[in-house]
Length: 186
Image (cartoon, rainbow, N blue to C red; front, side):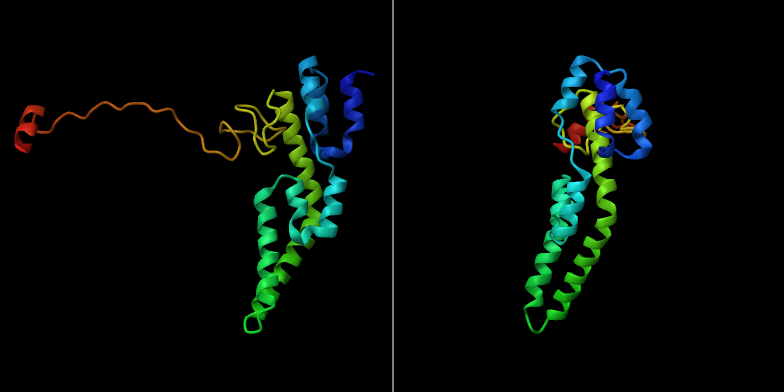
């Protein structure tokens, strides 16, 4: 059994089912260098993410685990504000509403976190195959597809920046010339 077949069949649960045919095809053509990058890539366990979501999802630990730092911070702040405002007698109802919102968010994440982890693992594999080991999972390779997700920007999530191109100077209007405009400023 080749590396690609062994790796593919041993890691099926880490990637979205709809991406498996593309992944199998990509793995069938790997070089030794790509094998090393794939083996050096840390893929996240969807099962571990689900367990974190079930036990401490209200704190955002499931999102921190998946390197979704912004969502993790959002859940943590929502929980912290809910607790802080909940103990103040006058505005305690606001704190309770924030805690309720955090609980609903955590409950929704029970159903979303496995899919989110598998999608990020697909991005990690794409980065490893294309030589970008060590980049955060949300970054795609310039000009490459992240298993069916085309990227139009150098890195996914970042705007494409056009290099600076000097524009031709506009001609002076009427009888005003550069010498005339300088003399009028004196």
